[in-house]
Length: 456
Ligand code: BGC
Picture 1 (cartoon, rainbow, N blue to C red):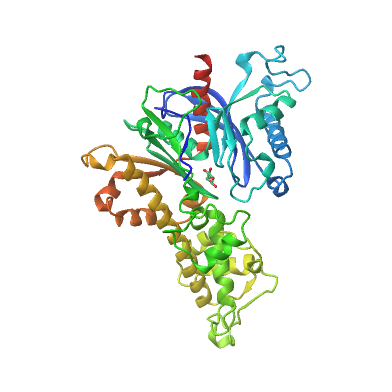
Picture 2: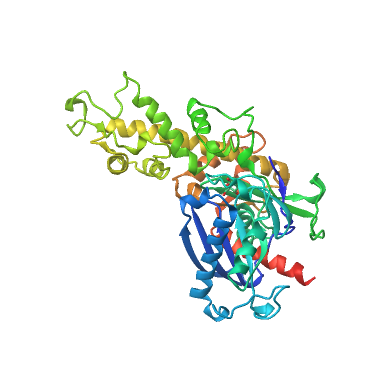
């Protein structure tokens, strides 16, 4: 795993104050927000979101993507902070153009960039590789903060990219700011389109040379594990024919192998491949009936040849949540979705049950593998050694999978209880809570730390 030092050396305690901006690039959407930290564990967030055009995810040059991002930041400031923005005369203070915006009117911005980055300082880092369907080779090896700042400057926006943040680090920060407790959170994890975790490690355990400036007084540093690339060589990860097919057809074969078994972007595709394989089996009457007597609705099931199930990425992971949530005897909601989304006409109860069972197995494997990563970090921290009345070991999680897939967290707990070294007692001490807005409030908190370092 990459185990990237983040130059963030402490987690917040809820007393931090100020107004910051944050942007988030990491999956399907680009989010822009401004955050007012109130200093009492609360905050106010103003936010806007735009889908990233598919063609920009695979643009020829990095500049095309970053120009789009800067434009969205411009729109946001114009709409929500008009007082700081004058389109015609606006100038940000830069070394080359000292006239214009007063330094105190320049927003400090936390840039949540949720891809593997070699971090060289709190607002400097070069892209190692793209993940989650992005592929712009021109950007690899470049400093993503500089790319964004350049485009911001072209639009004369009063914004300084102050901090580069992985979404997991933001989640860890947000959890520590908002959750009450003596100690901050240990781990921030994302189980969404992609998956990853960032945790607090002892500086003494770091083996990598650190080039940039950082505060040594806490004795800790947050590490971005990039666990999505755990076991790319497949020594221990399960590997089914559908995992193999998915990887082969992906934009990045052979990498992010753990992520490809765990995160939301891929689960629907694993399920799709397994279902398509079943459909090919003559001897299995799946999504079809011999005649209406074998269909509980006295119809005949068939699947349209135009069904998106026959296309790569044609099965959205969201239908797995519907399958898991539908516990009615007739599975009528799931059957309706199979009809409207996948053009499976008149699915019978046994079709829906089979679909639910396969989807459930794919999701359960994902949750159990997720528990392995969580357990690894908890065991490494040594925090389970203490007495049981000690504070809980706090873990902040975010992402569509953990938020929307029913019982995902319960399945993680079930697996934790059966892991050596954790067990029933250990699992009780681990508190996994949703930490929303990590990429907003978390990034703002890191921008705040960075602003403090600028002054020094
Ligand atoms: C990226 C990580 C990110 C995770 C969750 C992965 O694909 O490599 O940097 O934290 O997705 O968004």
